[in-house]
Image 1 (tube, protein in one colour):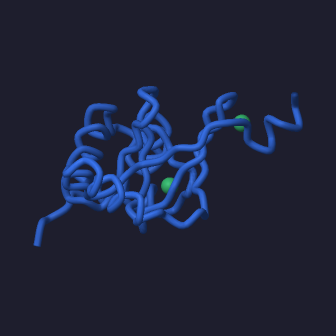
Image 2 (spheres, rainbow, N blue to C red):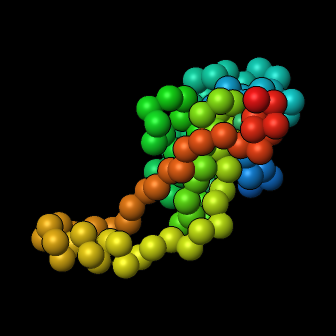
Image 3 (cartoon, rainbow, N blue to C red):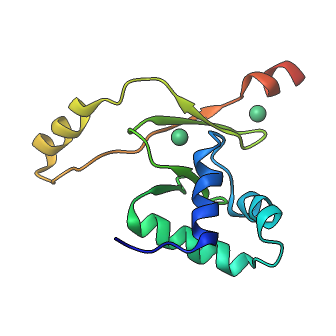
Length: 127
Ligand SMILES: [Zn+2]
Ligand SMILES: [Zn+2]
């Protein structure tokens, strides 16, 4: 079994506790509450390791700031174009799409990522 540092364990716990797909900056601020001397570099490094271990997922679909989440069943995301909030989406993942694309292209598809864009409820009420 791989030994995890306490800092890494802390970062993992932070991600387990939220469904908000936080940025590395936010995770850093949270981690500092337990480890005041932790550096941004340490947070990045641990996020990378956790990703390689397959326990967290990095969402970088839009090419903007990466967001992270504790790994769970595949699901779609909605990103608000106004405030940047990323919300989990309860639409069932369409596995048939992978097979259709496979048949058409001859490519071996493992999964697909889909992100819906628009305005979240909060931003709709402001505008
Ligand atoms: Zn919004
Ligand atoms: Zn998610």
